[in-house]
Length: 343
Ligand SMILES: [Zn+2]
Ligand SMILES: [Zn+2]
Image 1: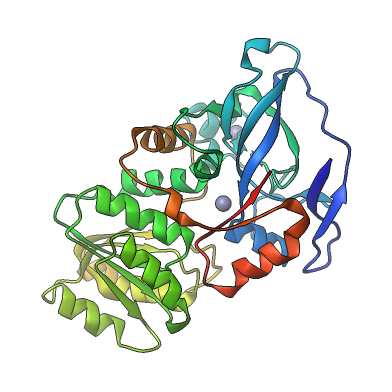
Image 2: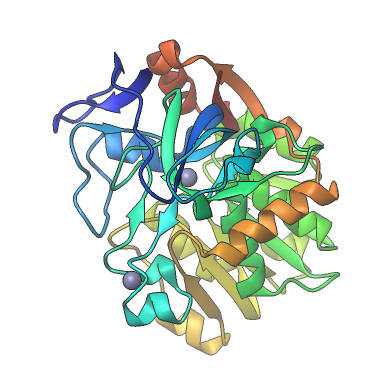
């Protein structure tokens, strides 16, 4: 089968190649992938910049955001699942450590994550434990369902920051995770959602405004602290979601958050500049987390099935597996929201 792999330990290694179709083991299903989205994590793995708990195996099929159809049931799995349309939950914990036993498989030191610690979804097929293949509603397209994993991260944020109707938020980083937070926070009844990025994000800002963003601020063109102060009557924003993954963005998050505000940090950045005094004096709560657990993934599926959010406009670029390099280049350019491989 065709697959996009990181072929060597060299930075930038990326190949479209032919590999054997995976064999289903006991408890697995074989899924024909119909849509798989590119994530910032994929780019960091390709460039050897990913900071994970385990080394990335080489060679490895990339990709972890996918939806497809079950075409084979492994030993022990009912053949009734064949033909089911599914989205793939990417993580499995060891199932035995303390964190797994209390339901935090994303905190398991021995976790497996498709496309990070084992073969992923930029391929025609994947063999995956049946429990990680969740049925999607008939009304949800494969393209939209491929965003279940990133949207699960947004469900996790909402659970942590608990948005209240009428509050305000700033989202630093207007990429795909930023845009998904925008949709969810607007659907939660926020009064004002402000997108924060760079001048080069003009196209992303334009789409964000179509999706409901109230204001956009390019930090290289205007003073974001002053602008957010002005837009919030001097209060700052109640919620900040930092998705830009830069030390400056982390510092900015703590400068623009309101007293008793909440900050959610997404950037896997080894160090940052922020003022603990600002955090303490304002009684700010900051959340850090990685990946998600099953209730977030299932929560994302339920929101998709409900139709309360229109996810389709988030997919701005579509490619076939043969066009791996063009797709990665498009992702880098910064005028995309979600880039998806389709088959
Ligand atoms: Zn991802
Ligand atoms: Zn575990």
